[in-house]
Structure formats: C-alpha cells, structure tokens
Length: 176
Image (cartoon, rainbow, N blue to C red; front, side, top):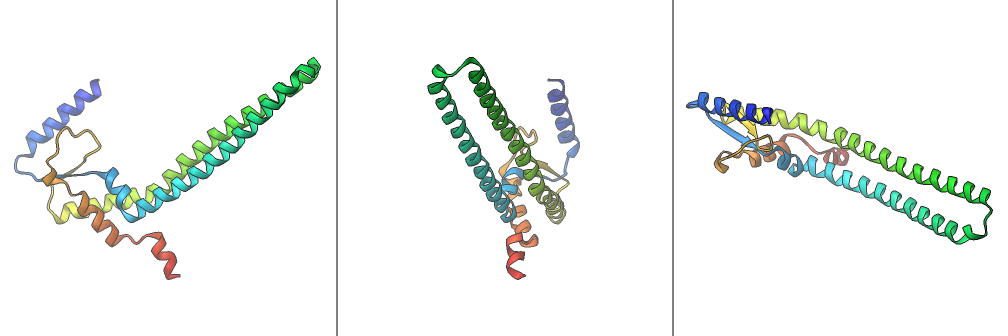
C-alpha cells in the first residue's frame, strides 16, 4: 500500500512539474506481441509449450494405467508386493511432478531468452521514436498509468519502426 501511494505521489509530482513538456505512452506488452519478431517468438513458445504439455499428458496417462492395473491386482498381492508396487507408483508420480517443474522452469528461461533481445531493441526504438517526435517522457501503459489519452499512444509507430529496422530471424534465414 505504501508503494502504491508513493507511486501516485511521484506520478502527480511529475505531472505537476511537466508544465509544457510533451509526453506519450506506449503499450509495450502489445508492441512486443505485435512486432514480427515478438509474434514469431510467441509462436515458438506456444509450440514448445504444447509439446511439453503433450509429453506431460502422456506420462499422466501412463500413471493412470499403472494405477488402475495396480488396483486390479492388489487384492491377490502379498503385502510385500503391494508395498513394492506402491513405491514404484509413488516414484513414477514424483518423477512426473519433477518433469512438470523442470518443464515450467525451462519454459520461463526460454521465454526470457527469446524476449530479451526484443526488449532491448524495443527500448532503443522507443527512445528513437520519442526523440524524433520530441517527447520529454514516454510512459509504459502497463506500469501504473491511471489515465492515458489515446492521442498520445505511440504504440503503432513503435511497432512499425521496430519491424522496419529490426529484421526477423526468419528473414535472415531465407537470405543464407
């Protein structure tokens, strides 16, 4: 709560001190998902995520089958055999859970690896567009703006300039 209040006070202070300054905002989330390089990264991530989901679903199905087989056979098993089979099932279940955790960590790292160059390029392009348009400040729409006049939205200009200046990896592959 304290930090939200501090943010409001800081924002109001900046607004009061701006006077005749010009400002704009950019929706970086929209821009990063819309630029060609961002859309390609999103498609790659979705494909990889779907592959991991498929693998997890197959493993889960195997676990269900093994559990069902165990339940059918447990009535005729000795106590030692039951304990052994239960331990095997528990181990497979724990392996499945660990695979899920590892997949999640891998996807987060993969997303960071794919998006970081786009973020870096986006910062450069935003600075370029802001300088060209003579904006004193450019806010990120997703970072706590309470009101933004759409006439000050430079997101489309950033997307256009980004795609013009930054060639996609797909375009580079075709030239080789």
